[in-house]
Image 1 (spheres, rainbow, N blue to C red):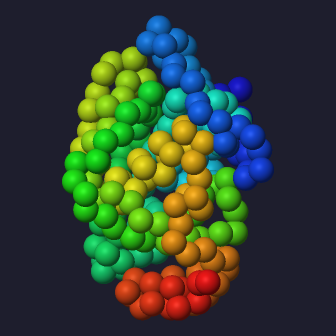
Image 2 (cartoon, rainbow, N blue to C red; image 1 turned 90 degrees about the vertical axis):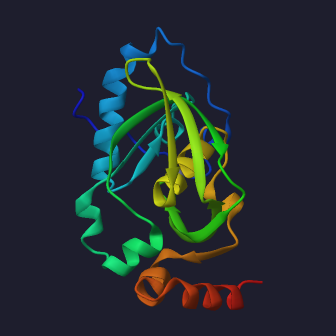
Length: 197
Ligand code: ZN
């Protein structure tokens, strides 16, 4: 049963707009089977993060992982531009996010619950997250770059916020792949801002 994939709910489902409930410390260890199923669902969708509301459960749990194999299609320059590094698998219960500085970064994002759309989203460059791990133990991490972006995107899901709510510009992901995917970020920003109303 743990091998079975969970269904990813899409925009329009009310659960994506609800505030998720905190998980009590005693309950965390009993949710290991759910963590494993979310991990598998994230892998099968080639995502770098998944929040429990995206599988229809309004609880404060996110899983993240940025695998080396996902970086193979990107050049060194693109990885540097995204400040993207390999991130091992992590499950975070009841995450509390705070900004380390006022500095922001803009880049494009997508979401498994909002298929077909890519958007330019400003995010804090550095964040701190306090959470409980899979064993219910208190942890704290500081993150910058792409990991900071993933954390902000996934923790937003626990508050009923989608990336399109924070977007400066939206575009169909097909045109992203065809026209922007391999261009320097500055050129893409100029292009999409000149097209947005
Ligand atoms: Zn998402």
